[in-house]
Image (cartoon, rainbow, N blue to C red; front, side, top):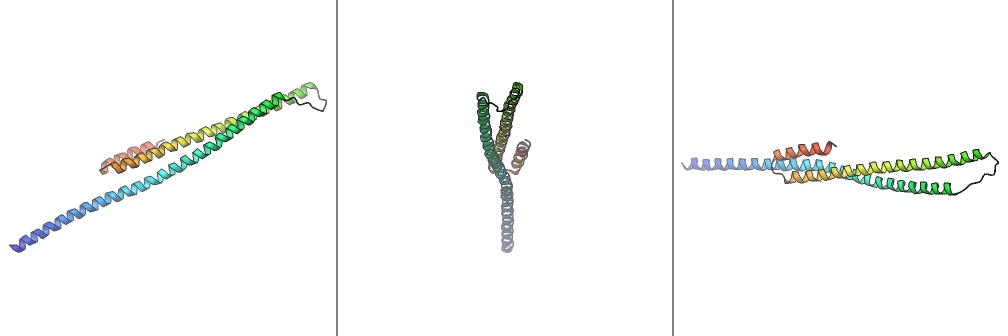
Length: 169
């Protein structure tokens, strides 16, 4: 009788130990899965942050170029319309006038076109900066939700919706 109760107690402890070990392994598996998914997410977060910073720098450069071209164009317009250049060659007046006006208008059109072109590139770079900033915030929010969630089903739902929201832009 004593042997059977001792054997039953040993069997009971073994079963309890198996259950405890199984639960610990499941918890470790979940923790490992979360850590790996957060590491994968961290790669995207770094990529979005790098892209955001690159587009911010680029937009500042294009803004400077736009302002410089605008000021240069205004200075050229002011100079061309307020300075009278005489010619040493005796040409008919209509040739001098045509030559003089065509040069003025060409300078105005070239300066204005270059300014608008640089301003459009600035606008595009600034827009890309904003898009990547939003994606970076979305990834950080996603990481916060994953860390805060308890069950795997909730994590999977968060993963699906967040992935659809972030990468559908």
